[in-house]
Image 1 (spheres, rainbow, N blue to C red):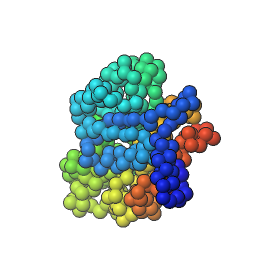
Image 2 (image 1 turned 180 degrees about the vertical axis):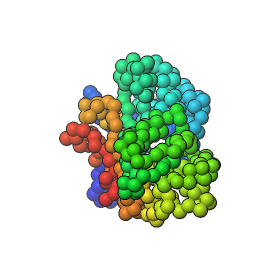
Image 3 (image 1 turned 120 degrees about the horizontal axis):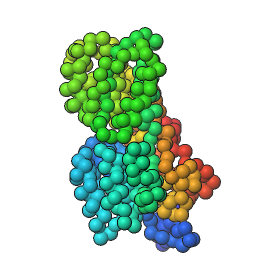
Length: 370
């Protein structure tokens, strides 16, 4: 893109050229083709803070890369999700790519639905489980138009949260209460596995009960109101997201407990509220980073569309190590950075089209913490 100043009629001419340069993509045979069009089948609610923020980061990347992105929300309803997927399939102007999430294990049905379609599929955030892939195959196998996947290190996230939470007891014994998400969701399952790995390393910590709070603040609040009095010796509360942590925290406060003092909480996500809680010390452990995943998927699809197959730069199925522990200072910095238009990033610097020397995509949130 041109970045120097011009005036008069030349300004218009240069502006037009810049727009064309941004939109046009080199084809695998050396010509020029239309920018990629992508539909993201978002499994969340259209007013759900996490998924809305996730989509905003994704849109910022799409804008930088000249991708035409449309988001379709499933409203956490598998039937509605599949119905809207059929609408995409039958559209008179189908997209080049459909990005989907294996929420509620709907992915095999989506693959079957698009099996004969020229639309290419890409799994994001959570892909098919090993058990599912034993039945339907992996990417670029039985379903040739399923070209790849990009997921975060969810198991490690659960482990990091649990380990950091346990460290608050400085080697003393203690009891933990845990809130996972939706039972039939790979992200929840993997985070639970990470928590269980940490507990196996610390036999001095007893897990009193694991609840499925369904990612919901209200649900976790109702559960915690019952469970906290039952386990009076609790000192640790592990939560697979921020909404459930806040629900349990509210219940604890109503029952006379002091989050951050006599009851230690962990959470995962990137909301303004969770950053503030980490800065103020009510939340002792925060893990975040995966909200950037959709943006990095746009980089991969942009490059693939231009004939630069991401499979040659780190593989077609990728686990991005995006999750990291975020301390109070970093929470404050990240909170401010996420308010900057476009997040202060030029997503083209992560693209092999613009930077051919890239040998592997090493996505992270480091740049957002600077």
